[in-house]
Length: 298
Image 1 (tube, rainbow, N blue to C red):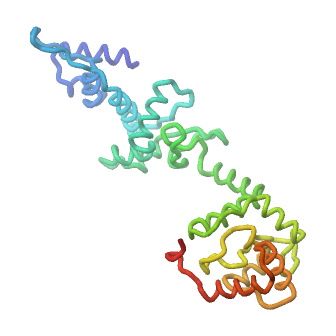
Image 2 (image 1 turned 90 degrees about the horizontal axis):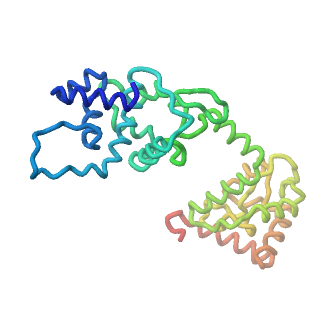
Image 3 (image 1 turned 135 degrees about the vertical axis):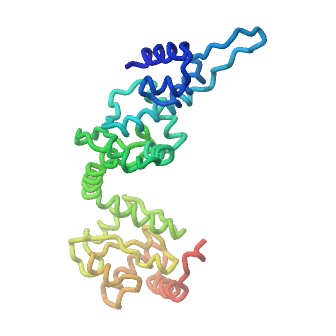
């Protein structure tokens, strides 16, 4: 039964003297829907005419229409399979905006409004389906993640496709992601995080895209010469060197062992910091002797 036919049938039953609950039962609906239609002025319960009665203002009840639409999704999911519309109308977008502003996402709405009578969030999500924008498969709602920018606060792509997409992006943009991760580490610790992709590319070029310590050309990663755990340094061009995974693992949160390569690295970083090699070594020793916990870093 369409919306127009439903309202006409409900009005006829109300005119016949049936209660709101009885009308809902006769139309295989629920009383809250009838109540909302009455509040919006789409249904009327006729009363004896009285000139002193002021007509009720039905403006401002748009949110009830949106609640009704969300409620319909949940109740249809209780009865069986529901597929979220792909070709959405203006009204659908308005419901989506309301859902995201009021609840954050359809997940939160179901959790808050319909966790009753055994039909909790998980049960309803198994009966609500959505088509993934990447693989075009129609999957249950629990295969998607919340995302506020998308329709009803549900991501357009399923978790499986997003994981693959993220893995592909990471492998294609390894250097960029590495810099981003290391900058975030420094930022969380309130340390400088100014290293750019161009600066890191130059550092790699300066060491011929090889490990600064053992000259290996595989598994190169960014190392903080002055470890972030000391509370000094940061992710900057003046504190970053390329090390292979093996050398980086051995160095960890300590200084490099004395060697010819260490001397070369310190001269390189000293020049970056406008210091002499001796001044830079003294500065590194001072940082090691005056380690700061995160709480003391300003």
